[in-house]
Amino acid sequence: MTDAPSYGFDTLQIHAGARPDPATGARQTPIYQTTAYVFRDADHAAALFNLQEVGFIYSRLTNPTVAVLQERIATLEGGVGAVCCSSGHAAQIMALFPLMAPGRNVVVSTRLYGGTVTQFSQTIKRFGWSAKFVDFDDTEAVKAAIDDDTRAVFCESIANPGGYITDLDAISAIADAAGLPLIVDNTSATPYLCRPIEHGATLVVHSTTKYLTGNGTVTGGAIVDSGRFDWSASDKFPSLSAPEPAYHGLKFHETFGPLAFTFHGIAIGLRDLGMTMNPQAAHYTLMGIETLSLRMDRHVANAIKLAKWLEADDRIGKVTYAGLPSSPYYDRVARICPKGAGGLFTFSVKGGYEACVALVNALEIFSHVANLGDTRSLIIHSASTTHRQLTPDQQEAAGAGPDMVRVSIGIEDADDLIADLDQALTKATA
Ligand SMILES: *Cc1c(COP(=O)(O)O)cnc(C)c1O
Image (cartoon, rainbow, N blue to C red; front, side, top):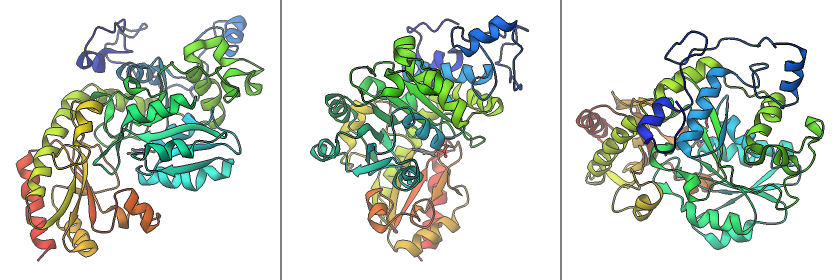
């Protein structure tokens, strides 16, 4: 189909980017399980390598199955292009790579997925990059953290481990004023609940591992470009605005306009970093995306029921779900993620660390796993697992203190989930 913007989300999640297979007419997107593609002749090969013609060369760079997924995600996010890659963490590196250089920094929210905190506070230092962690509710602190070496601002829309919604309008205004791109990790919200580009995001990153695939089968990531950032407005982004030595002096912004970031991500990011999504993974994620809106509606409805039930239970301390009227972020839901606050939240159990561990062990329907965004309900005690490498201060800042568990509410019957929590809490707090 042609991606007419007039189509609704439910139509686009099934059709955007896909067309019947030109070779066979296959209605479902085939899995193009191939590494390489035959050039028509030597001129065709040269044109492809010069980026004068768009086509397929080698599957580290592009693959037709992956290309459908890229177009599907870009369309759902309202971007001009997307690059898929091997995981959400790969997407974060791929998003920063064209912007950063040794000595440069990124200003990031303290409320992030635990693995992202580690990637940003430790691993990126090996590239000579650094991250400055700031409370994104303190807009003055965000402004103050930006300096001449800052090249991006990074946050999550609905922040993992849940319960926090970033005021994307306020943060994008700060990034804009500083002439910097805002990168938003939209994994927990998905484009069904939140469209960061409409709130001023320059780039949107995803762990497609989670809700986009939806059933815990494959890892993947995506970087969506809004196409709205002027990379040539300053000399801060030479990989995009100046002759790029890694591509025989090509000026990406001048040559590709709004698609500069996307082309750079494929021609240099995937070519040289090699964090490629394979076509099998793209296939599973395409299958998942077809039902994204249906699943998200149910994740949200179940999360509200469970959060309310937990909040009313005396064995529970606090429940941090932005969809509860008691949440300090409740007012942001209508503005930032109008279809709901997602399916993730944390709650504290009276009895602390020991009770949390006992709860996790006693649950029958909920699985104890380090994942989220599955059709199945999942639970994790962050302090002893995903957030274990963080300092106590970092754990608290990320909403992952020792008495907190994080749940990813699935799409099962809500009453069964409540009964399961009830029996496990009885054991855990006995
Ligand atoms: C899981 C996750 C990531 C990392 O994604 P992987 O696919 O596991 O590499 C990044 N951000 C958020 C919000 C996540 O939930």
